[in-house]
Each structure stands twice: as C-alpha cells, then as structure tokens.
Length: 400
Ligand code: PLP
Image (cartoon, rainbow, N blue to C red; front, side, top):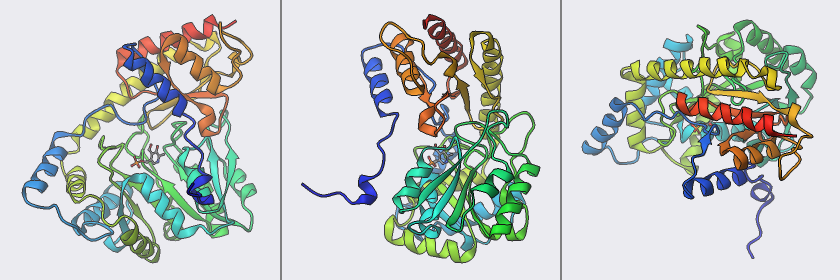
C-alpha cells in the first residue's frame, strides 16, 4: 500500500461530506430538499462574460500564457484596485491564480514556515486551518463573540501574537458570519500588525457583497506600510458568479508576487487562458449584472432577517450579517432535546436531524469552529427560503 505523507494524510476530510451525501441521496430519491448549504451565487455568469470566453476560443486564444497571468488581465486587476480600493499596484505585483483558494494556498506557501503560528479569527472559513497545517504550521484561533458581531478586536489580536506568529488571516466580509469590519476597526487591527511587523493575508473574496450602504475597506488601504505587509486575495467567483471558472488573484509586495509567480510556474502554470479572457470582460465590462445580483441578495437578506426576527420567541437567535450571503443561526438552545431518533448534542446532530426530519440542508457551525450555530446561505430563491425557514421552525418546535 502506498504510504501517504504527513502533509496530505493529515488533512481532515470535509465535515460536511456526510451531510452532502445524505442530501444528494434524498434528492436522487425525488425528495424536495431545501438547500441552505450553498456556498456560491445561484445566478449564472453574466452573458457578456460567457460571450468573451466564446470569442477567446474562436480567436484561438487557447494556448499557454505567462504563468503569473495574462498581462492584460493583470493590468485590469491593477485598475480594479485603483478604482475600487484606491490602491496602486503594478502588474508585477499581481498573480492570477486558480480561484481564491489557490491564491490563499500560494500566499501561505510563500510566507509561512514549518512550526510558525498563523492567527485565524473564529468562526473561520474552513479551508484556512487545513492550508496552514499542510505547510506544517499551527493555526491559532481567536474566538470572536456574537456580542461583538463576530469581529476580532485589536486587543484580542495583540494577546494572540507570539514570537512564532507569521501571519494573520483576515476575512472581511466574512464567510461564515457575514461580519464586515468598519474602517476604524480595521485601522485598530492594522496598528497592531504594523507594531509587530505582521503579514496579513486579507481575503476579500466577498468585497462586492456588502449591504445597508456599507462599503468594503481593505486593510491594505490603511497606510503604505500596511500595504507592504498585506497580501490581498480576491477573485471573480463570488462577485461575478464565476465559481466554476476558477479565477482568483492576489496582490502583494513585488518580491512576494515574484516568488509566488515562480512557484506557480512549476505547480499549475497559467490559469485557463479562456477563463482569463472571461475575467477581463468581468472586470472591464458592464458591471450592471453584478449590481443586480447584489440587489437580489440584499432583498433575500432583508426577507431572511424579517423572518428570523420573528423566530426569537422560538429560541432561535442570529447576528445580523452585513456582507457575503450567509447568516449564523444560533441553535444551541435546542441541544439536550431529542427527536424520535436522537438527542441533539451539537451543530452536526442538529443539521443531520434537520435534514432527515424536514429535508432542509444547512452547514453545521462546528465546521467553522462554532458549534453553537448552523450556517444558512441565502443563495436560494425567496420561495425556497420562506419554506425552508418554516421547516426549521417546525423542526425546533418538534424537539422534546
Ligand atoms: N475565501 C472565502 C472566504 C470563501 O468563502 C471562498 C469560497 O467559498 C474562497 C475564498 C475561495 O473562492 P474560490 O472558489 O475562488 O476558490
């Protein structure tokens, strides 16, 4: 039998696997499962972007391009940073990657040594700790509170830093909590990072998905020094409904981007050339389809909040999300109660039994380091959402 390395053998299997398998099995049996587990926009990629990909193929843009990215796309990414974030980057500071996930992997590979510590505010997106562990480093979680809107404070960050800390992974807007840090909150965190010369991986994948008139603020905007310390990760997956195309990018200090580009040239080489032409159309073309999608998410979020407000009496609580398309529903009041099969002892039990009893799929909070909640995505139609929330309430009321 082939012996696996510690690096790969140690990667945790996805905790949601059992749930997705059960949900798929129920769907295949013709049951109507309402899925709050979705991690991607339920809209198709805008037509102008799809057309740009077709045109690229027709024109024969089907060959290798520079490993770190198509020069025209890197230039468009620089223009995006200038336009949206007031940040000046040169194309040599940009690397086009296979999705945001690959950009995160590259950034950690470039900065984190074996034995280092990486600070991750919790609840967190579940890929972060796995990537950190893959490189032999140790995730150090900072537990945020619901009272503070699931946001890490500067004091918490300061207390978590040790001589071994190599990186902070910062995610605003946040998956899974929907938290969006304000400019002042980010400035306070940046002051700590600057004092400790701490590199920040700023995951800004959900930049465009902010509500209530808020705007996204990047930690790299705080000061030239903070920009030097920051690796921004962004991409087209969420903003332009392009999850399947695999288009992410990062911006970093020149020597970091250069090293990542070289590493990528041997690992994956360039991102699919056709995808890169589509990405060019996404960044440079009509932005209206993206605004329409954000508007639809905003309306769903309003509806969800309105319904959940009415559920507080049932014992369900939530923290109003300000971005992304998720809400953490606090379900721990129901732990210790049972349905006909099982005593609910955590978010995994809650989600599995909810699926079995009411055919509603949601992601257990334990996957994100918060066992008191389940994560509900509102990337589904208003009708499904209303029906699904009604079923969740019915499930909670049925527990004895
Ligand atoms: N960062 C966060 C917080 C995400 O939720 C996701 C996807 O779910 C990603 C990064 C990765 O995005 P991509 O699909 O472009 O790899």
